[in-house]
Image (cartoon, rainbow over all chains, first blue to last red; front, side, top):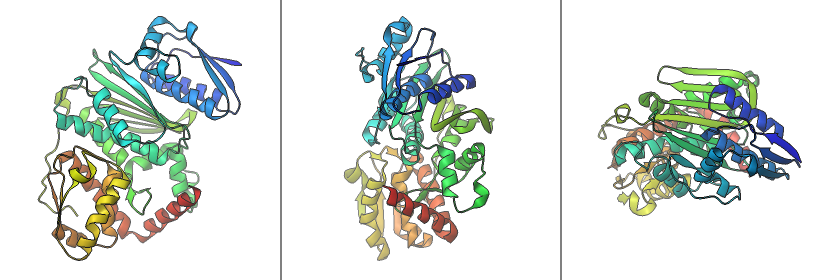
Length: 294
Length: 115
């Protein structure tokens, strides 16, 4: 049995490196792992979602995973209990309350489940003081994160998400992780017949995924506008969207569109989105329905 | 023909499968040159896969000018309309670019063989 010590994990870039180091440590067959929290003082929602994924990854690769619950500080245990994480990982615990947006595992895309999660748990507590129409608009946008993960991710263990409301900062954060093939792999595969794209960097692949309307879909339809839609929404909201996939990193904010390669590697895709809760940051453009749409 | 989308799909129009239901209902009429109205009253949540299969793939064998004339979209929320417009833009590009279409079709074929 290998003991892996979970450090304190916030959501700065170096914290994501810590997560990907953990992924590297457990990404193997037949591992027996105990997660120990003796040196962990804080876990943000990105860490909770990712940790759940790591546990399922170990199990999926014929390993065994256990949590040293006794090593956990009371505040962390309490937060993991409220988020439903303890319950999902078989350690009982009370159901969700407070500012925590529940930890969620989705092996398949069940539209009602995902929509309800976003509507009722992420936005539904009145944290974002907007009309139901605007709330639906946010759900429509963030839904594209899930749809992208399910359509492109090929994650054998599904999708993991967790969120948090930060009342003092007036922001909502949501993290969605899949443990599939990653965006760069999909983009390079798409261009497999074009030798120029074999050496395309992970950062370039992410940039392409954001800019192009040409990803692939079943049934002879084209799409790929999900990330584009998200990008526009985050800019309007003065929010922040970060995507980690392979060594690629994308940061979208009102003033920034950064795509870069980093030293740490994660084969799947981790999306971190921050939205402002202030209603003044939301506006919906009125669309003229009568003009030709085709 | 008028179709009440809420009655058929419900308030969440998200999946490819649901989109296909609508496509299968409207494609024959539109191909025959008949007018169709898609009424989205009470539909609240939209996602691109739904619009891709319901409406985007109409552009495979129908011309944009014919669709503008024959297909009427009513009571769609502003958010729904913005998703739909992007889907249509992408679909037009896809169906008008043979190289892109072949590249996509190749990938789809391989994907289907791997399922």
